[in-house]
Image (cartoon, one colour):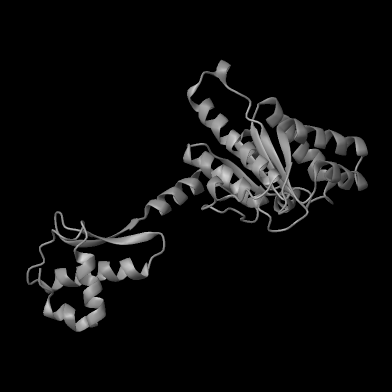
Length: 279
């Protein structure tokens, strides 16, 4: 198939060679451009987009039926991201990573290997529960992921779990604890917000403990939500800079110690606790 002369004027020799190679791919090799300048330029535009990805998450494609037209279509990866966005709503600051996957979680020590196993068990149990009867459903125990170290993978692991659950069609809510506490204090749609947190098939509370000064939030919002999720066997995941023991001590500083103990007790009933480190 000869290149149109007009097309040759637009490209360097090196780019022409790249274009010829591109046009030999399966989706292009059977195109009949003939002497059409317009068709040749369309092919060139698709080629340029293939190289530069001018519209991230989408690729320019050439439709030839019923007439020739350029169409942007979402990539496979973009379709997955869109599905994950639809299934998990975000409240507060956006700490979602839609590309995180369990296979990419570093397992370079015993604790991280244990965390990986607990995370994969969550996904496996959720998958099994999709096809079994209510009587056969297993309790899907959540995860409390903590570490004093920053950038250690706590939120990444929570994101990876929720992404894999979303790929199974399971959705929920992903919240940033300090932002959630601030929103709750405004009393705007508080009842609806609490209902969403209670009813969500999966609830992720990211950075719990960072809101420790808000005693009202813990007693009036967090405690009822966790109690409800415990009673209804709902999957709950936490990330924190504090172990549950350290979190109880922190909460007890400006709270009734008994209330702090009750809250931590609910967390431990909902979750397995795991500490992450690089050593």
